[in-house]
View 1: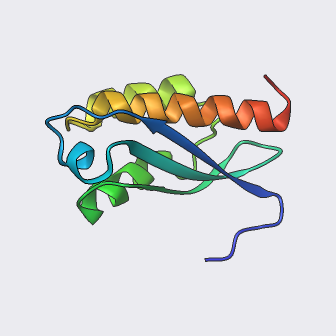
View 2: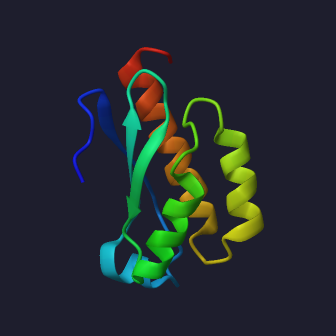
Length: 108
């Protein structure tokens, strides 16, 4: 997939529980978001989950949402639909990516 020239990649990271396979495999949980620089629209997402269905499910929640304006709605959706040990780390990753995005775009 080719991304538009006005897109940027922001990565959020957080520590998962020591009981989670992601911790044993990667040590940290990461989410990479391809975002339109000016608008905040999320074009693509991937995270370092163990199973691809999990990464696909996370992407389905994020793609088409706006990182600048939909943070609370995304958190609520994660809390109501994503039931894994990485629920809290996913929220933390999203917030970390949001702060990186805001710093890069000068809106923070």
